[in-house]
Image 1 (cartoon, rainbow, N blue to C red):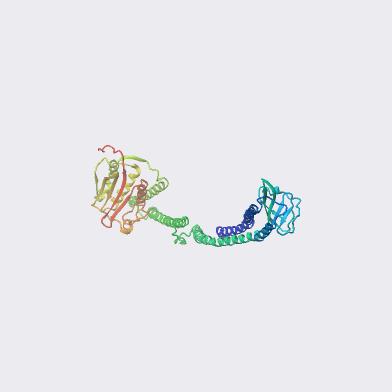
Image 2 (cartoon, helix red, strand yellow):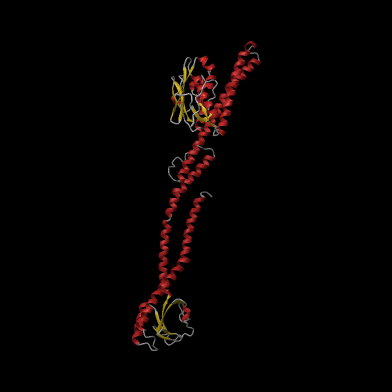
Length: 475
């Protein structure tokens, strides 16, 4: 059944109403009757005490004076009750209705009242209807001469009970109807949002990550945050799916181009299209394309390793100049071909940082390799290292082709290449800068880029200065 939670809530609401009626009928009714009876008996007992104290101070006489009987008759009418004066042996000396006068109730026993001053029933089969009988002792010299009994039919109490129960039912009905507001609020605040979330989850499960049914979730509560989180998750999954498509497209492109060249040149050599005297030239091209594939494969393996183990850094303290010098030396051949000079500017040679040496070496190599690759002939590359407070700032700046403004935020994406770089970057995989940023971020540091198209590019990243500086680097 759909909307199970909602129907359960409605069912619970109905059960609440039925349970309320059942409680009123079985428990409240009984408790009300008991309370009204007790209160009525208490009032009648107080009236009995007053009568005994006013007219029977000297005890009980066999013949009750006529003036007292008249007062008792009047009192009985006012109380809508029946008054008896009865001796301890059960003989009735006075009856306000006169019908039971001088009658003896053989089974009468005052101890039947127990620790109460009233009982409910037909009073030893005297009355045909249920009656409340309240007993008040008449004493003389600390001995009981007899009792004043006040009998009142429980019909009056029952009418009062019905009035109270009707009032309770009306009150409960008002509360029950008012609680519909809770059901309405539940529908608006809980059920409808949960229904939207459930539907959205179903759409996302089908692969429809562009479903926008949760875009209007703005409530700052648990359900609202759940909807926002689910919408954000779908957006991220959609972006991830798009990235995967782009990833596959870029990998296919970067693998297909050298493979096509290799296949074409080898087939040409095998079918004689390329004569033997020119084969060495084209074998060199094949070797170049093979090295390009090897580099691309290594970058993919490095990226995969970094994705799974990127947070496992081996932090050590090392001298930054000792790391830079051999890296710069590896680019001497490339720099000589393009007549590029690398200028290293350091505030001091004893800058010591706390980082993963191998990973930072990879970062600097990638950035210098890009600078050399995209620099114009007869230009220079500046590598500048400065410190501020607890941070070391490393800047690598070239005066090459630069990066278009619209591409600055995309250069960190895997396999991304700007249109300007595609003509020059024959060996690049589009993974270097992505790996570089992930390494720096794993160190909880920052890397930024400043570039002007046609004027050059500068990459700046930070490292944590070691607490204890090593001795100055010496040649």
